[in-house]
Image 1: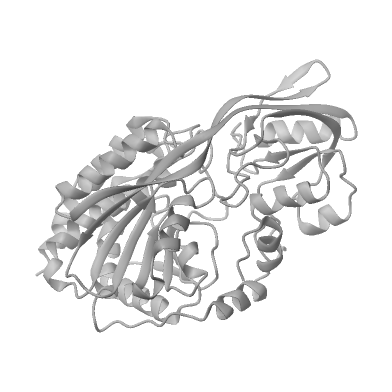
Image 2 (image 1 turned 180 degrees about the vertical axis):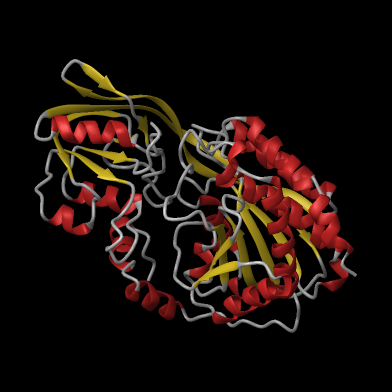
Amino acid sequence: MHDWIGETFTSDTGWNHLEALVDIGNRMAGSEGERRAAEATRDALAEVGARDARLEEFEIQGWMRGESTIRTGDADNACIALPRSPSAEVTGEFVDLGYGLPADFEEHDIDGNVVLVASDVPDHHDRFVHRSEKYHRAVAGGAAAFVFRNHVPGQLPPTGSVGGTDGPIGEIPAVGVSKEVGMRLGRRYGGETVSVAVEADIHDATSRNVHAEVGPDSQKRLLVTSHVDAHDIAEGAMDNGAGTAMVVELARTLHSREDELDTTVEFVVFGAEEVGLCGSEYLAEETDLGTVKAVLNNDGVVAGRTLSLLTHDFDELETVAERVADRFDHPITTVPKQGPHSDHWPFVRWGVPSYHVTSDTGPDRGWGHTHADTLDKLDARTFREQAILLTELAVELADDGFAVSHKDPEDIAAALEAEGEAAGMQLTGEWPY
């Protein structure tokens, strides 16, 4: 009865696919590498027995990184462009806003200035302030350029998009710098004139979602998802090769347990997540959301040994996850708060019960969105353990005995208001209510 557990713990299917993805190289949204990764994932899903494995194309705003610099006097300081930054060169007074909290922007006149903010928030702050919100606050204040400083040491400049689906290219140039470079700039050049130059190739491009299915042909479906694109500066092993490899492994395990499924399980591997959730936005717009029982979105798995599941305040999702954890005597952390920054969100915001499946990595984000997002940071044992837990969770979700109601979108909006997320989302254009 439990042979599937041993087979999963000794399987190399998912891990082999992870290696194949990182070996492709650049998987930036709309790139040749992203296309190759999507095709390889389609083929891998078919090979493990999922039916109707296919690609669905959609158009996006393409962006390719060129050279970037922050010039101080006669020196060029190392930086990397943030995706969807416009190609531009500007000059302004350098202003270090520390964490870049809303109050920091309110207390400073930044019109025409080059603004530096950190990638984290202090422990005492009541919520996390996303990069996109900090960028849009800089734009709203009339800043000439945006400099995003990593809070993690190690000479690692961070990346991350400053655009979205509605405004794919940002209004001011944006670059990322390492903690060390940012601290030096803030110490030596506050109040002095600096220039920021970004070169980027902005063009029309095509991305694609990967689909496949197992289980019965039912009126409702469970979506098991990830995203296949990655930032071009690294291998994208954690973000999100591991999530896509997990989807392939879950397709294998769920195909072997197909007779236990009461609901269609549809695997969807999205394209262009890193530049505005483009693939999931595309699917959500063309889907009757009433037919989606739940979403199990894998983005951040394997980075830490303990799974961490954002449940978006769906009590039933928390309960079933805790039941799986008890059954296997293996910890799973559940977090009830809203999480509007991955491919589950285009579904959650309209009330679809959804998990964001990530892992507990401690207080620091770590290697993600840097050059250090490489395969050596991940562990095959952790991958296999999490595959067992997520297989059981998916079987529970697909059972007719498990029921979870959709929420009224007004309830999601109220939760965002209560958690302090609404003002930032309204600023960035992500507020749909």
